[in-house]
Length: 421
Image (cartoon, rainbow, N blue to C red; front, side):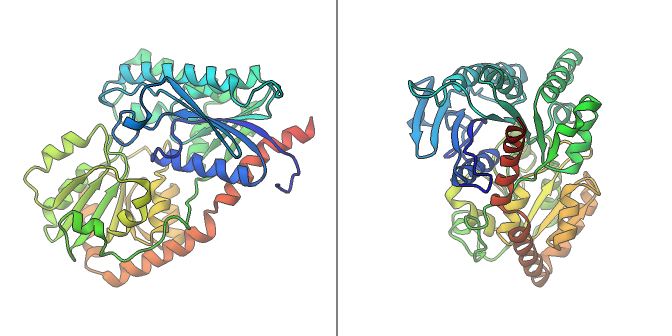
């Protein structure tokens, strides 16, 4: 039981949860387990596993939703209505809407039985999708609970800045939904001070006290440094070559065209793009004549340490202007794996500050291939420096990014208002 001595009953709304291997799913899974360790009862409403292939996995098909009981509560898994491509924004919006509606229906029932009242203490909802904000408000109101809204990426800002959304009416509707969702939440949690500044401008001045910064974390027991000569390298047909890796969503927010440009100039290195997303096919076409570029599907979460350890250098590029709307959570996992990072992200934002504080890597200006390639070349030639940076990152993240501390911070958002009632 936690130090508060209060046992909370919480409903958690999130797009992914174990065994789904999306980064946000790993984050919320660990938060739930840590809150359970503190003695709380939790009822998760999430999607059927679908992230790896952007389709529901075979063993989970056949039902609109499924409910399973756990030692700490329950998990309800809902059909996510995935489309065949992430580029059809209308189809994705409809899918998010249907998913959020069914999540809301299931969340009203979560944790209820003949001996349980509908009353809960809180709802923890995650965005994206942004639609879960109003779903969370609906559930929290009917079940007389507090709503804490967790923002992993600020939508629609990222989509607008990358040009993924250009229709003015859609943008206006999304911005209205965003403002209403923030202002109707009892607490809004963001990952960094940069995201806090962004969201502060969108809420009523009287509501800014409801904004909180709680960073993501990494499970340093699950992700550990390993020898670079992994079985994964063998599967790629690679030996002792320097491997530069991008691992994560292959989308238009990331400047992955710079990775292809680097591969064309640095023939002595091999570049691995591990993941999937809307920009993957375009990138594959641009790299079709480069034999040192390897595109690989997402790997099972159990292999994460091995996959990350296979690289000598990890790159985290993000297009200019996006650091105020997104914090690439993959960064924490890379640090835990003991590998150096080259970040091409807006200066004086969360990731560059983190790399500077930890000594775990190098930051360059975004969307500048010359600086990006120069940083890769310099680090590729210095195995001693790579080892030093990797060790620095591992030590820093183990000391700073504790899952237990993050869970306690979320607990406090629900406990303090309850005590004051």
